[in-house]
Structure formats: structure tokens, C-alpha cells
Length: 217
Image 1: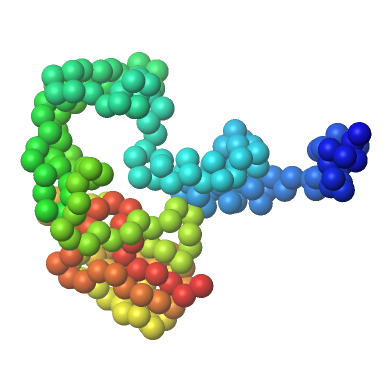
Image 2: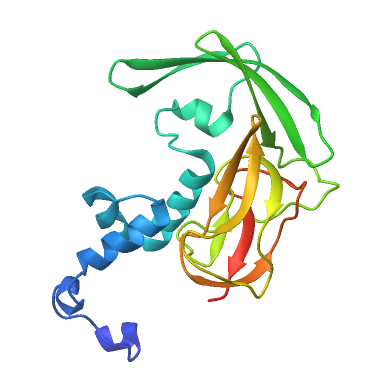
């Protein structure tokens, strides 16, 4: 009966875990840290060992949007409407009150400006509207944990680019500079390597996480 069902496929006769190689927790912690951009805790390491693809998607989502676990489920899944307010407890004793005021008109790059209040103080943020088609090309996002890709640490304007494709760089060497809020920030190489491609030039506006350059593998 079993042979007719499995049709020649090998059947496990013992506990499935007995046939698996031992987990390398140190290597897993390193991989998780690369994906998250920080030291991973024990829960995150185990999550990656059990569900590596799911965890990688989770890490990419956090890199783009931050920790959204404090959001109420309806707001996370469906969003809120202008005039609605929600509260988020981001840590013990610290609560944020968020009220959506309005959503601006669409921009040519497929984004909109969202106006809201955070604990009574006016704020605004530019977001991508996936329902719009952009008339300008958008740069790809850097892959979290990928050592050959350098992403923008913050939104801003590229002021200078100090390297070009084919240049060899050393750790700590200046690559480019960004201007945000009238303050200029220098982006330094975090590793030795050879530049494969530079995707920006002086005057290019970038969003946080957008790919600035690639190293050769």
C-alpha cells in the first residue's frame, strides 16, 4: 500500500529532525545581523533558521518601513482615512497619537505627500503610491545584508560623487556626499573593494534605502 502511494520516493522512517545537520547558530547570527543591519537576538536567529525566506522578506520590509508591530492590525492592513486618529505604544510609557490630516496630489514620480499630526505636531512625509504610474525612472532599493550594494542612509540630494566605475576603494574612503536639511553628510566606504557601477550623480534626489552604487562581487 505504501509503495503504491509514494511511487518509489524515499520514506522517512524516523523523526525528521534526526536526518538534518546540526544548526550553526553562530553563522545564523551573522547572517541575521547582515540582513538586519544590527546584532540579531536569539528569537530572530531561530526565526531565520526555521523560515529563512520568510525572515528575509521580513528584514526587507523592516528596512523599508521600520518596525510596524505597534500599529493596530486594521491600520496596518487597510490604512486610516483623513480625520481618523490612532495610538501606538512604541515602548512602555511612550505612546504616539497619530492623526491623518490629508493626502496630497500625485507627483510626476509616482509619489504623494501625506500630512498628519504626531502628538499634536504637524508632520509630512512623501510616500510611493503604487496605484500611480511614474513618469520618471525610479532607482532600485539596496538589498539589506548584500555587501556589494550601498544604499542611501537617508533621503537627500547627492552633492558630490568621489568615485567612478572601476575605481578601487579602501575602507573609510569617501564615496559621495548627501545634503539633507541643509546639512551635508559624507558617505564612506565600509569595506575594501572595486566599484562596479555608480547609479547617481551630483544633483540627484534620493530616498532612504535607494541604491547608490555597487561593488564588484
